[in-house]
Each structure stands twice: as structure tokens, then as C-alpha cells.
Image (cartoon, rainbow, N blue to C red):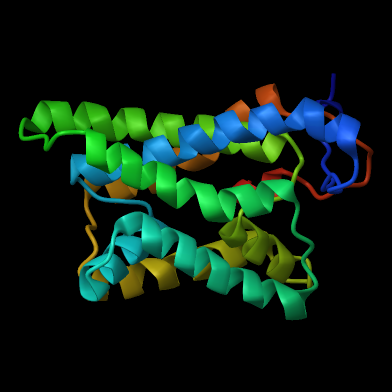
Length: 223
């Protein structure tokens, strides 16, 4: 079988497509739980965060609010940028925007402080893998991308190379977050190197096929 034949196809399933929602929504929910859990664990490990989470953490510290509150608030602001870009949200978009931050805060609330470097390293690695599982599940369900993924793909759809758009957005988030005091470290490097291959691997196994001609899921990971 060729690579093209193995590649999953996607479209955003509409809010009124009830049979498909029933089939796909459980995967979205499990995926977002994994995503929020993985993010919370990488924060608790204190070894460096993904570029967007560096920004979330920096803003949370400067504003004196919970990490998850910033994840939700920034997600809502980014959704406003979808309007001129004509990016269409889905059920998964709404759930992602409102749910991931709450789950991350819950994980941070129930997870004790980790002092052992070995434990922190293991938790950080586990967190990255769980994030990748979550990405594979919620994007693979085809109910709409998260606000940050959707911003990237909608800009790229206007004729810009995906890898340039993704790199530009993530470097901007990383630089701003670092300036605000977010944690940059080995975990940031591990996340940057690992999330693409891991996310792509899980996406190929968890996707629910839909109509041909939909956006290329590889675009999400810059492959």
C-alpha cells in the first residue's frame, strides 16, 4: 500500500451530523483528557514546556491566575482570529478550547510536587507521549482542530508553507513566554523533537476515515 493510500483523510463533521457525532465524540473526549493530562504532567515536571505552554505559563505567572485559565482565555482570543481567516470550528474545537485548560489545572491540583530529577524526567516523557495520544485521538475524530492548530492550518491554507507557519507561530509563542518567565528547558527540546513523529504515528492509528479531499492531517505536525 502506498503512503497516499495509508494517509488519513479529514473534514470537520458538522454539529447536526448526529450519527457521526455519536461515533466520534467519545474519541474527542478521551483525546482531550489525554491532552490536558499530558500538559499538566509536563508543567509539574518543571523541565521545560511546549512553546505554547511556555507562553501560557508565563502569562499565568504575570497575571497571577491559574495555568488552565490562560489556556482557555488565549484559546478564545485565538478563535477570534479564525473569523477573518474563515476557519470553521467544530464540536471538537469548542470542547478543546473550554476543556483542556480545566483538565490541566485538575492534574496540577492533584499531582504532588516532584523533587527527584529521575521522577521529573520520567513524568515529562510520559506527559509528551500522552499529549501525542491525545492529539491523535481528537484530531483523528474529525470534529475540528483546537484553536492553535486551526490558526496554523488556516494561515497555511492561504498559500504559505506549513512548516514556516508552524515554526513562526511556535517560535513567537516560545520567545514571548520565555520573556514572561515561562519554563524553557530540556523538556521543550524533547517536546519539539518528539511531538511530530509521535503525533503522526498515533494519528495514523486513531483516525476515523471520512471523505477524500479533506485537509492533510500531516499539516498539523509539519511533516
